[in-house]
Length: 220
Image (cartoon, rainbow, N blue to C red):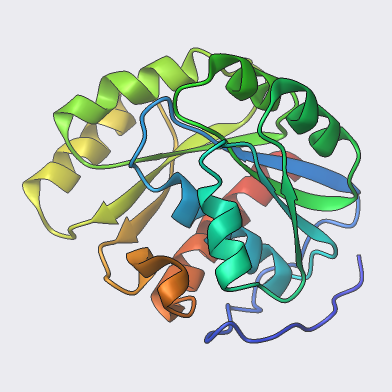
């Protein structure tokens, strides 16, 4: 897949890793958690931006949530190289995930099981954003139970306070449970600022590391 430079989005990710696997023509990355308020929209937007920087062309952001948080963010602050599709129903998300080229990142709703299952059934990989804390575990487990056994999936701990007991306990929990941890996104005001701010350097680098792990799982 030919690399085509895009805007810098206020940062450049590392070029030391191979860019998108040329053997993979299309890919669907689904961002999902049955709980809301865990960082799904931030994760979706940053992953789409990281995919552009990694050389994917085209990149599609599919917003399957009726609240349209990703779409509102994208419309307020468009990302060069990313196309937006709103697909807030079981039928439209299935069609969007089937009829695209390149890489798609899908933002799913927290409370609509039919839409979520339609997205998960067509996922090449699933990223589960979560927070550090005991109440979060059961929600992630409920999400994991909806994912097919052959679909690579991993947890991304969002808004993490580095060095805290909560984070250490969360990492230990998922490690003991044999659930892959694909990333720890540090708590930064800039990362969580939404469309009011430019994409934050630390956020792009952290989510690029997540994307590298997803691509390795997909091509492995």
